[in-house]
Image 1 (cartoon, rainbow, N blue to C red):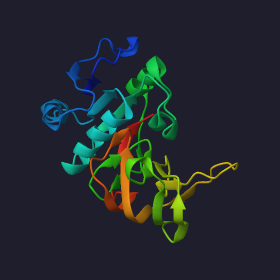
Image 2 (spheres, rainbow, N blue to C red):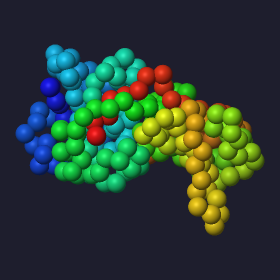
Image 3 (tube, helix red, strand yellow):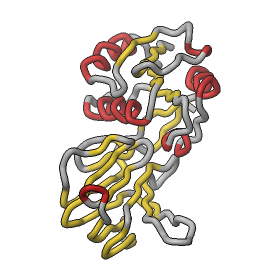
Image 4 (cartoon, rainbow, N blue to C red):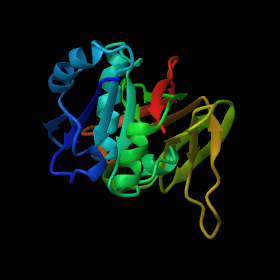
Length: 219
């Protein structure tokens, strides 16, 4: 097995990863740099790439693998903090996550993307412009999530099928998630924050859905 570590920004390297081949990159990896690593992995029948960084870094790697049709690459994720993706995929953090990324087995999990072709691994938060209330109507498959105005809409991937779940804040009540293959929003205007990266424009609609291919998560 050929294993490469992609260290994002100044993320400390856990002891378990210290002896592995490591490539340094920015907080969000550049596609060109990922392309430099992939030929090395392609020489092995069981290529494995370990992402050491945050949710946005993992999302960027998976987005590139999806767009270049390389979802056969096994991907391990080592966050130092308890991120949304770490919770969604039940991975742990730090050296414990690193040991799992090295010695764990890859399994197929749903790959969630949106209508811009960007993968979501942790959480999307959708609000109105400038953080205002979100107005519109949203569905998860055939179930209406809301109609009218809400503080925000949240979307996360799921470890198992159907792949996507969405919710809205509920005053004085525990948040209730609705699961499905796709979460769709129509609105006069919304701003989408994907894995901590906020969009630079207002959109009239947003859809997150399960891609037709899964990705290979090492757990």
